Length: 85
Image 1 (cartoon, one colour):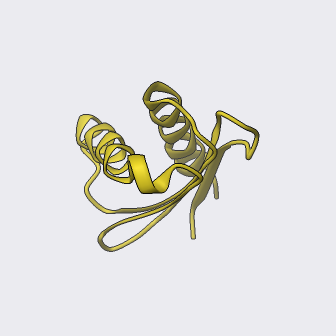
Image 2 (cartoon, rainbow, N blue to C red):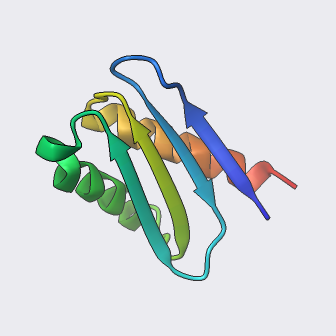
């Protein structure tokens, strides 16, 4: 199974793990989940739409990252997944 990981668990960052999947699955664990869960999910969904990806599992372990960081980590994780054997 192909897997890609990007980011860290440092403050103001996020670790994104992506895996091959038969459907779209998004799991978010965040220190600010109570306030920003929907925004984090929307950022992930919007980025996947831009990349024309509809079937993938995304696990987001967020430590307060801004939207552009989440997007960059997601794109990098997907690129790493595509290169993995």
